[in-house]
Length: 366
Image 1 (cartoon, rainbow, N blue to C red):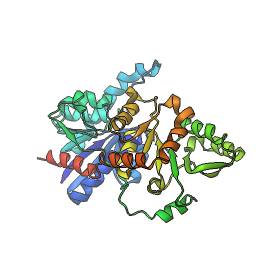
Image 2 (cartoon, one colour):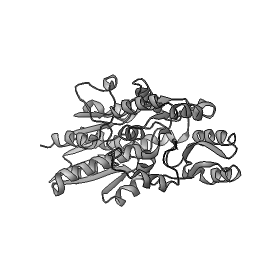
Image 3 (cartoon, rainbow, N blue to C red):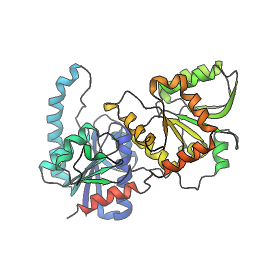
Image 4 (cartoon, helix red, strand yellow):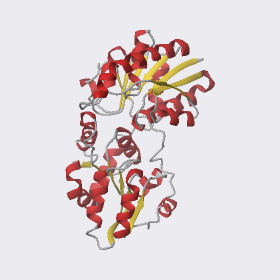
């Protein structure tokens, strides 16, 4: 029996890649592998992971705030406590390998594992390495990355280009298009744009849609699936009640993203790492509007990695309300551009990323 600890948390961008790798390990090794997740107490992983059937231990850890706050003065206490908790977990579980997927939850367990001689793997989702992975990469056996050029952050001899592990199998060509259009109440044969800003929503993209809708007079020139996000749902529904517009389907949360990707001719989206990887698998022409409110402006760097390869287009957050929809409309009416973007973004997809990361973990078994 081999034992593996997988750690990453705080956001879905760190959790879901770890879950995807857990599924790959279970698929390949079955009952011969035992998996334990380690996350941060009070964060989403502490509920999500048990609901998926895996065990998880929580660390009393908090992240460094990148602005002045008195909470940062308590950080040394949380770090020391989490290191002691991590040491206890490793002594009790006796892992053969520890894999970290970024986020401050993974730092203590990966660091302690390295100090105790347990082989470690790290997986970096973004094109600009996160602080935790930059700290713990020195003693890692392998660094699994999703973008080229990551040797500026990590030892090139440790880097393995795996892509970002995803649970959803987008772009497999087996989606019922008629059912997908019916699910969103839209018509086949009409250009369709998907506007998506994450499960909670994005103020910028919602304001972009509001600015456009008030100019339409009740009739959109294309079909739109507009995901408002749950945080903004009430506000946006009240707005939409005052400006009802044919052709626009407003939803708070997209429960069938595979359907939405299938029928979208153009996607307007933030550029978080896992979202970018999904869009590559789905082969979707995309207009990225990177969030400026993330560490090291990594969403802009993620988007530019595709834009520089003619695999996507981008407008900055501050420009979205003025030119976001106008740019998307030009895209959706340019078949040659759509074909180019779709072909180029598809080249960047790695559908077997979870298995590639699992390979690197299995290689560390003694």
